[in-house]
Every structure is written in C-alpha cells, then in structure tokens.
Image 1 (cartoon, one colour):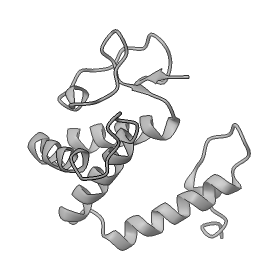
Image 2 (cartoon, helix red, strand yellow; image 1 turned 90 degrees about the vertical axis):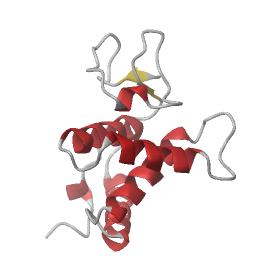
Image 3 (spheres, one colour; image 1 turned 90 degrees about the horizontal axis):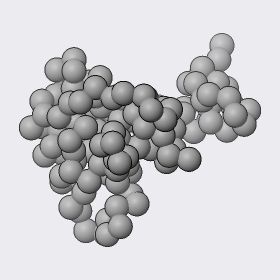
Image 4 (cartoon, helix red, strand yellow; image 1 turned 45 degrees about the vertical axis):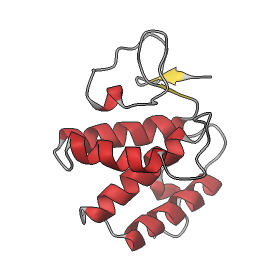
Length: 133
C-alpha cells in the first residue's frame, strides 16, 4: 500500500524544495508516496537535514541527480529510493557529517535490528543484539 509523506492517506505534507525533486513518486494530489516505510524514513531524514542546513538544496539536487543518472539505473524508476539513499549517504560523507565506516556500521546495525524485530513491530536500532548491553 502506498502512503504519503504523513504515512497515512489524506495527511498534508509541508511543501519544500525536496518535495519537488525530479522523479519523486507522488500521489494525484502531488504529495510524495512511499511503497515501503524505509522510503518515508529516508525522505524524512533528508528533509530534516536540509531544514537544519546540513546541506543546501543545490548540494542535494546535484547529489541526487548524479545518482539518478548513473549507468545501470532502472529506466522505470523502481530504484528511485535506492538512488535517494546513495545520494544522502554520499552527501553526508562528502560533507564529513559521517564517514563511510560509520554509515557501514549503522547499516549493519540496522540489518541486525531488522532481523531481531518481530514482524509488524517498528525497527529500532536498540533492537540490534550487538547494541544491547
């Protein structure tokens, strides 16, 4: 089921430059839609980082565009949010917000947390068995 940026049908999304991103899947009302919860999460993280001036709109647009136009990307746009994640990760490392090593460690922690989380429950990093202690 597709959900809009608010995570539920009919919620209002504050318009921003990020919501105008080229190729962003949108509802008939023009709001971003997500096929999976992780897509909404990465979108929200990006919006928040932009609002906090971690990166400019121009930096974001350049990073996302570079990912979207890499050879081997799906012509149908089905890998759009994979491009989004790659663009955000690359931008955060390029701006020294996080290192490749830190992002890789968080990725592995998230994967372990997902495996340890019962079906239907929210995935939280504290569910990573290696983080407990």
